[in-house]
Length: 167
Image (cartoon, rainbow, N blue to C red; front, side, top):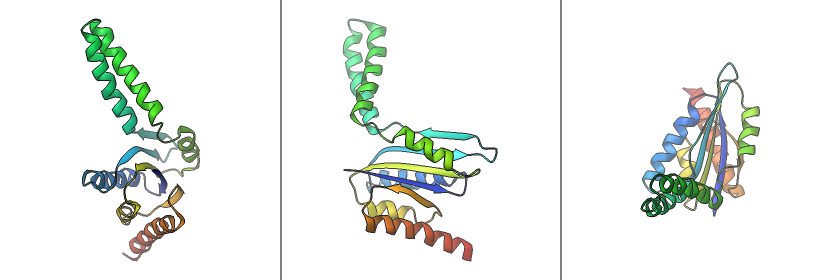
C-alpha cells in the first residue's frame, strides 16, 4: 500500500533538506520511495519543481532498455530509442506517482520564499518517516496516513517549530 505525505515549509530550501533526510532513510532500508517532488517558490513568486522519476518509471525504463537492446540487433538506433521510450511509458502507466494537479494546487497556495515536499512511499513503517521529519518545521497539507500517524507527524513538525523558537 502506498502512503502519500505532502508538507509545506516556510524556508525555500527546507523541503530539499527534508528530502535528503528521507533519502538517507531510504538507503538504510527504513522506507521505500515510490515518487517524490520538491516545489519551491522564490521571493519574486517564481515556481520551481523538482519531480523525481517514480520507481515504476525507472523499472519501465530498465525493461525498455532490455527490449531496446534486443531490438538493437535488428534495428540498431530505433531499437534503443523505441525501447527506452516504450519502457518509460509502460512504467509510468504502472505507477503514476504523485498527481500533477495536486502539485499545481499546492504551488498556487505556497507563500513566496516557501517550499513543499511530496513523498509517496511504498510499504514500510510510517514511524520512520515521522521521526525523520522531527528536525523540520512545517505544515501537513495532505496525507494518507491513519489518524494517529497523521497527528504524530503534525506534532513532530510543530515540536520542531517550538524548539527552534526557543533557541
